Length: 181
Image 1 (cartoon, helix red, strand yellow):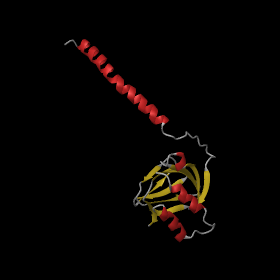
Image 2: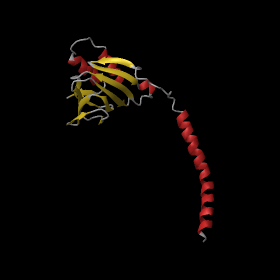
Image 3: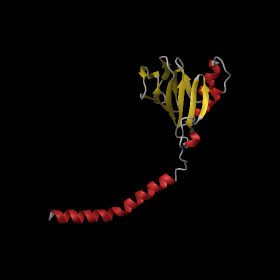
Image 4: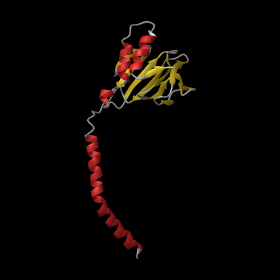
């Protein structure tokens, strides 16, 4: 068989055969974008709900109601020495990305220092902790998925000022499936 003739005939035949599939995929893509039910959102640096969660100043940028409960994202603006002791989440995974400063992070028993631009992933059921080190404040973007943890942060932020009552903190965190180790 002549190669040019074969390619020409095969290409036309294949093109005609694929038209229904291409049309269907465009419809699916269009339907999935239009059918998400989520509103686009632009969040400026100064936007968000600010919470003081036991010294961790969090500016919540996206919460479950914004993302169909898929993700929550906040910016931590934290003084040196502030951190979260070792704990385990049973409901959500977390991603930590340092924007400014230095954060010492422990994930699954391995400790490292995150500098500007570094990222760590702490899946659920794995112990992790973090602490701001050095002499400057740290800024870190934290994401948790699925959402829900933002409700716990609201409860923690409503605790009275002063040294935290660890029993109350542990109970609130326990209600979210988080245990300290």
